[in-house]
Image 1 (cartoon, one colour):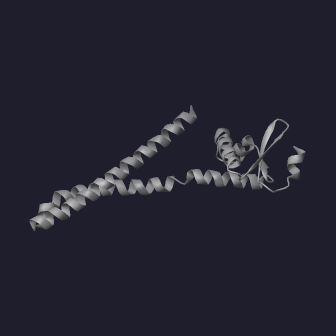
Image 2 (cartoon, one colour):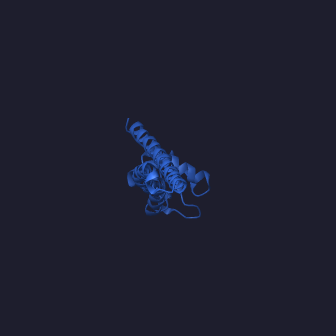
Image 3 (cartoon, one colour):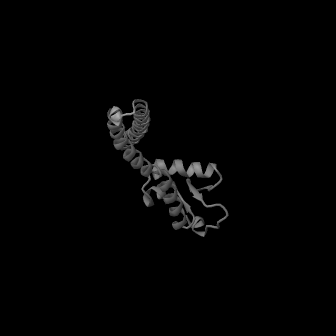
Length: 146
């Protein structure tokens, strides 16, 4: 249930970001239209409606875009958090340990660890029925004890 809410929230955030980009684009178009109307008419008051519309669109859209950009690197933070947990855990970790030591769920940690291993960034070893993800080229005496 929590996973479903999180996915819905993420999808909603992307929808809000798409709306923000669209609104900002409309605001820029209205601004261009205002300039063209003012130049064509030769009277600044002729474009006031376009300027007001542009200000409203840009005033709503630009802050939403900036908020959305701040929220986007969260997945990279999860990866960095995961790699730090591997380092802090002696160079190897299981998905369950990763979930306990990071803000990731077991499913998210497992997916990220698998992707990193698939890209050659981690090695995978099976010990006692558990998969251990390790930084390549590191000797792990702690892994031998588990």
